[in-house]
Amino acid sequence: MKNLDRFKGLSTTAIHGGENPGPSTRDSAPPIHMSSTFHVEEETSFSAAGFSEDNPYVYSRWSNPSVDMLSRKIAALEGTEDCACFASGMAAATSMFLSFLSSGDHAIISDVAYAGVSEFARDTLPRYGIEVSFVDMSDLDSLRNAFKSNTRLVHAESPANPIMRISDLPKIAELAKQAGAVATCDSTFSSPIATRPTEFGFDLVMHSVTKYIGGHGDALGGAVAGSRDMVGRLRSESCIHHGGIMSPFNAWLISRGASTLPLRMKAHEANAFAIARWLESHPKVTRVLYPGLKSHPQHRLARTQMKNFSGMIAFQVGSMENGEKLAETMRSGLNVIHYAVSLGHHRSLIYWLSTDAMIESSFKLKGDQLESYRALAGDGVFRFSVGLEDPEDLIDDLEAALA
Ligand SMILES: *Cc1c(COP(=O)(O)O)cnc(C)c1O
Image (tube, rainbow, N blue to C red; front, side, top):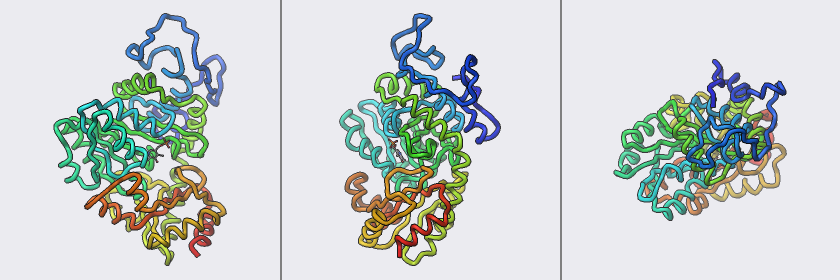
């Protein structure tokens, strides 16, 4: 991967990063390389061990020009040497865990994280002899106490889904480094426009590019960015052997979406501010969690590590009963906003996440950790991914539902 992708500004990088179409056709817009295999002109090694990013294209599970284009764009946006793309955000997350952890190792994972990551860490990793501690990473003393002599990986997520809890990324990276553990960060809610975790010392940053980076709700994908060495290891182990690679068509769609990421993030943030303030003034809304608002308990920390507060809001409407009633109204009664999971799209998406259900199915928290979750989530939150529609239309929709 040549380093032709760096420009002064992130907007130029988002548009031109990774895009250098072949000299013979002189395309302005990049083509889609759907070929699964390539003409081999020189005998090449058939083993993942012999693969480097300078290899000629051989077979698309190893590398593909359209997927490379997106990888280079994301690496340029994150400011890292390299990036590997996967079929989904979950494939990206599991690639890190399965490539950097072995039987007998210990991992520390944020006790509130994407539900699939939590469940994988709890239910699958132990079957491979990997011990996991789930830690509230916003509490640095708990994190400090969780390290063991065999801790090999620390996984953070900020803001954490769905309660918008912020973790102190530079401090977490420092503690991981002192312990000689790989520090990984799920930065899906922030996007590289808000936060670049490797600048704070993280080794690897992952995204569900299904969300903000793709941005249009029409393609699943995942990415992990970091140093050439570490991403190279992911590529040879996870892409080539586990096989959860991204399709060239998805890479092309997501790359097209990523071109407008800086512009979209500004608009997501502006809309989210307008909606969060409106929600705060609504009598039936009991709590609004948006890192950009002073009322967010970690607003000051958020300001030190988020250059954009993104478009994700969580809000409460009092009791569990109120939440379930409002969710029912929303399932049938919204005009513009879609009652649907996922996030980061140009279309607004909202979803009710009851605390009891999240704790029972995904997080299994007890004691102080459950208290810490409830302190932000109450009986449950509406997770609102504020899209790019006009805020007055979004407010009309919410107003009618809350009436
Ligand atoms: C959606 C999501 C994932 C999983 O990504 P998929 O593309 O759905 O597999 C991981 N982490 C976060 C924070 C997410 O929002």
